[in-house]
Image (cartoon, rainbow, N blue to C red; front, side):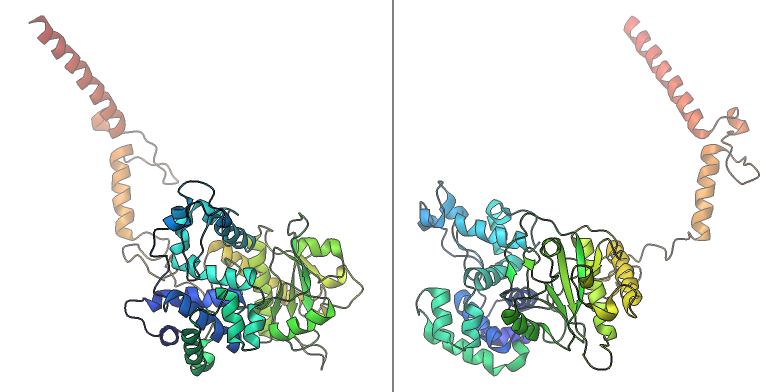
Length: 457
């Protein structure tokens, strides 16, 4: 969804910087799994009503009315104000600040499971203010997407509000969002919210087939799978919900990356429980006709996503048998077919994974994987026009350096052109530095003598 569409959907409220809010809002929809037309429309309608068209990211009241509210976890003096309402669905109370922190930490978005509890003002920053809505929608009210799929405004409103307050306004906003068509979708027109460095996929739609947590285990490797069909995130999730299988990520035939199970949870992917506990799984789209071919876009996207996971979880450069594994290693199956070690796509996939990992490490690509502008270290592509191009110094700069070294060390060099630091004949074969040190010592001695003479008088 672009800025113009967001502004229209929200009612073009004067003074609201919709350009600054476009990416955070798209990312929030993606994280919430509001990636279909009806889900996006209901998400927009509810968030628009709750925030006054994105007018408010923080409660106007100072929060003193929450003092002593034990039901909100405000058990200490001052916590009512400290944990006042923030975010487009206002996060209130110490208890909820802890819950939001734990969710964000489980997704690798913050470094600590108490981040927002420790830094509550951060929740009013657009990035986090919008993600509060994603947390509430997907984690605290996990039935919302199903209610949106049924286009049940009354049920969605009750889940958000606890009643039907503002139902007329929510209905009007829903109708307006629907009139905008597919332009409201978060992935419309590219990779909004997509980020290799923070492993944020194009879309999220969670399957029911997984176990919460990893039983204390840490991620050790990425496991490759093939779909044995030209499927996408939605069709995989629908299949997995009834089959008792799943994977963390899907890569479709055009290179779109979708998430079906959060990394912090255990997918039912490898047919081996111990392997499931320590792996992140990636399904690659192909077709069951003509020998299970996989598109170049799928190979590249799958390999790059694996590289991003290896970097994010500090697994090291992708190496098969170490941090890259195949499904067939853990179960009696042909999966991942031609992607498997020795298969016709294996080396191409590995080459791309290793090459892209190196680019991520050197930060030579932007978060969406496109190259940074040559000579520019920042993501904006800005360059320092005062810095000479390349590594070589200009002839003028080299001459200046040589003159300075001559003055400091003396002009005599050995056969290799290295300075001998033999000094200058005029200074008794001392370098300028040596002579300066000696002169400073003489001056200090003279100053002592003068001081002593003045004392005698």
